[in-house]
Image (cartoon, rainbow, N blue to C red):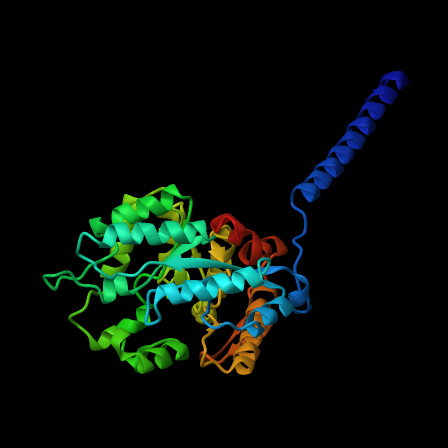
Length: 373
């Protein structure tokens, strides 16, 4: 059968053009995919000093410049946190204000309120007045401490938890002033375990030295679940309150449990103060889960250490320890190198988070969750 040469030419030309178009479209699609999914960029361990960082949970209770100067060398800005503990909150605030005035570009402070006159008509007006005075003096957060839920009782001997209605007016006042609550409510779950069962050496040491907080020894006290439930109930009552759960929100032992709360409470973030080893010990068994948690909740996690100084501190020793911990933390977040830390014996691997995630954890989340820092 003979084929007209003109028809044959048209068919071949059309086929050739079709193939050329297919190749061109394929190249365009490949280029588009490359543009949409750029290769992630990473920091290295050597970048530690070059990147501006924040530590949103330190305790500076001495008129000492060496701690702040070490932070400057490490390229960190600090939030020093007052706590309603043994040292009067008024004294802590006075120290913070003096240092903030001396280092306005390096230091901010979080205030706290005491529980003097709790259960009387005096407590609420004195607390509101003290907070207002603190806000006027530059406080950008309010620390609520574990003594609520672990020490405070009413006149009838009943435990007072953070979801008690008598705290509502204070929390509403804080929210109205656009101030962040930094809440250390409860303790790490290790506190309810025997010392030999604790996962972190630091917890073993702390609760050995502070048996009053070792809840395993105090079965009559509220349970771990009671502490978490009270905090969660408080957040349900105050959904618009900007809340940062100190110490990974006392859910340090399980990133899945922490993720549930972050999903439930959109105005909740967490700092990592003194709880990074808990992430590291979880990564020994399931590196991918911890890595993916950090990626998914990258807007809700803030770097912090819980380090600090008081008048009795060995300042040189503290500053060296603080620097070493900061460098180790940085290595954990930015590299995938094999590591060890003093808190447990197993080896683990760094998370090697992308630059964008590291910048949020170390800097932009601090600015988002603590306006004015």
